[in-house]
Image 1 (cartoon, one colour):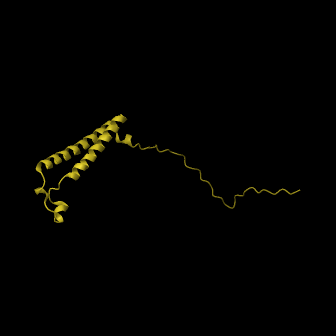
Image 2 (image 1 turned 120 degrees about the vertical axis):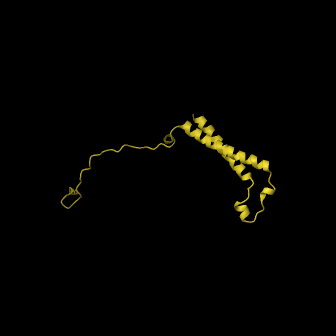
Image 3 (image 1 turned 135 degrees about the vertical axis):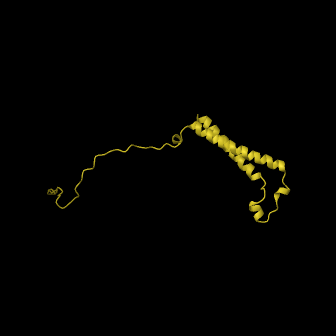
Length: 117
């Protein structure tokens, strides 16, 4: 089961990196920051077929990542197994005995020095 989980994690990482690359390679469709700062419209230079492929690849990789994540959760079982929380039952202890604070009435044993010879 560990090898399947590791394989799924590697596939998720690969799909995530590919998704980042595809999103960064896409041309903006107008609006956003490029039009705010007076940038020229990129629609006149873009190719429609390339944009269709990039959009389909984005949606496909996004869906793939979601499916792989859900599959990894199903395979691993409960989320509590991934991060176990140690819960200890509450122990009922007897109340501690009241200890009297040291007062002047309590005397410590006094040692008398032995005479030197």
